[in-house]
Amino acid sequence: MRVSVVLVITAVFVLYASGLEGYTVPGVETDEVLMSIHVWGEVRNPGTYLVPVGADLITGISAAGGPTSKAKLSDVRIVYEDSDIRYDLNRFLDAEGGPVPDLNPGATIHIPTSNFEWWKTAIDFSYKIIIAVNLIWIMTER
Image 1 (spheres, helix red, strand yellow):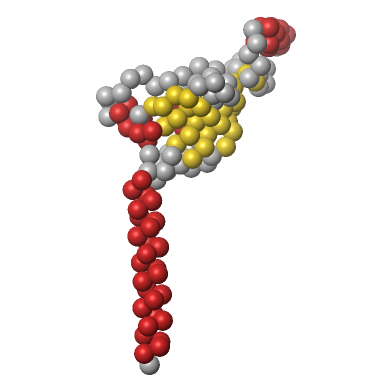
Image 2: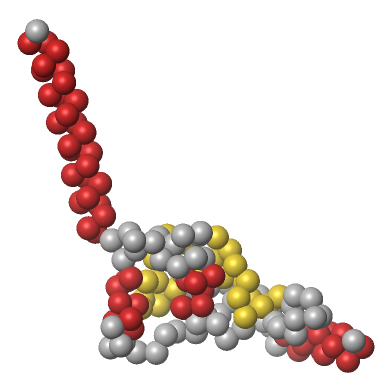
């Protein structure tokens, strides 16, 4: 137990000394250093998550419950204070893409809504308007 405490304290000191304050050390019993990331957009549970250091994009999206059926996986963004990385997750899932990017502390993953879903919503709204107009026309004709 004392060795674990010493290891955790040493890890925290090394991380802060190297300027990596975005890392979090959970309990002594896990022996795992975590980092905070944010996942936005078309995922099942958007929010802030703690993932292991060295986690990649897939791990980050999985922490948020995975993508929804409305997700546009061909334009996933990983945003940092000073940079913006775009990744085509569809190509990776088709075994054609490059390696999945690793995440750094404070990363914000954004998965946009697919354009097809916008059309589906517009058609559904138009259908409801047509039904309402039709009902009003029927009521005024009687």
